[in-house]
Image (cartoon, rainbow, N blue to C red):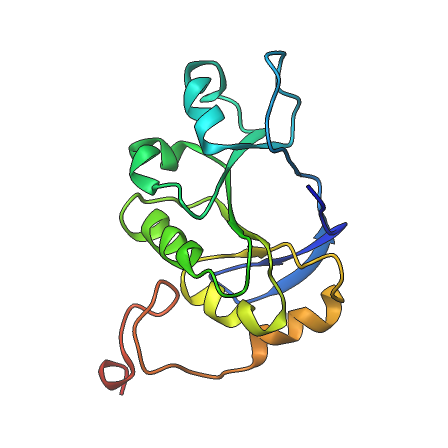
Length: 169
């Protein structure tokens, strides 16, 4: 699986962002051997090896678009990182996965968008609770980061702004 050498990381409280090296490797399938540190496993494989991996903070998971956050459930709060794959710009299921992980399952760790992620999607991803973005390898990460500045405010409530605009007056 291809990856960009850098990610955009956002501090949700302050809004500060930085471009940092990407130290996590997302694998399509892990062997039966020990899982190396800084590995993102598919949800299915993590669930199969849950007891072995749950206490490790150097192993995370990634959701495919057809994975259900309910499968992870209460274990979400024990993970340091969860990635959500966006295989195509037109596939919006990952937005719902991110929001459910934050609001229903209480996930507070790094929520990373991976796959077909680029400048035009960043603001919407942030509103659904994402705070790290692995930009497509063919896009400039510095230019993509500017997508977080596209809008000053929004009418609707979201993970990053729970009160709608009319309640913030």
